Length: 353
Image 1 (cartoon, one colour):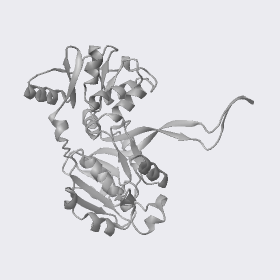
Image 2 (cartoon, helix red, strand yellow):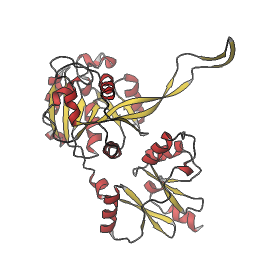
Image 3 (cartoon, helix red, strand yellow):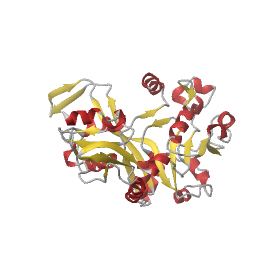
Image 4 (cartoon, one colour):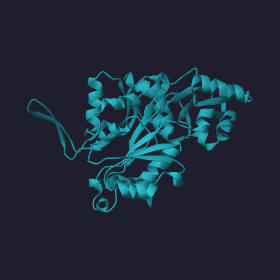
């Protein structure tokens, strides 16, 4: 009775983090997506604290062969950083900073009574610049893109690029570079220097189409920071950018590609055969594939690898880096992700958000 009362007295956001060891990775992912803490707190059936599970634990588990249906009992951290009720706040902040941890549970008599956020998480101030690709023709959104660029196409009465900016601002990104080509003047006239959005905006302007990555060559000597983020004006995601950047730097990567599972339905029935004998037919099966989410972190010095003002697509650039023996790694994430460059995805977004 006492344990149930303890659980019921927890704030709603903390309740969302609670999970049992025999629940699955898929359930944990849903848990992580619904909670603002980006962490699951593992408890037993008596509501005693057992450990924590974060996106890094899940990534490591999946890389070791676990599936979304696997139980979390073998992958959660059983000896995490935790604090007792009434712990010294300054010491907590210092410990979280040293260990590079965003959150830690607060425990009283084996029960979870709260979650302590780090100063880093509270400040949410990410210093690196964000390059947003805004130069595309928006062919998939015609006819509206015959009049305005894709970046200014309204989604729930707000330009999609503004939605992307507002989402990035939540993490403290303040420096933006917009890469433009098609109807670039309309974008520049709308956003100007970014002051009205409380950010700083600079522009790259293609004089000819440079593909999905060629405009990065125009960045030479324009970025002082060691790394920068790249995304598209039509990509909206709840990815944890703190985790993405830490993953990139901790793994000493040259290029980190955010990847995500995506379920797609085949247009055709699938026939399973052995020799000439038909064993089974599956009508329009749903397949899970791993996609490039068009969110990247790149080491700034790699810009010099590009031929100035020459067209190249992102996939070509990635393969070029791999052939050059650069450290190209993948960052799996599970949070919501939308490609607003299609009418179908815009409709799904409007219906759900």
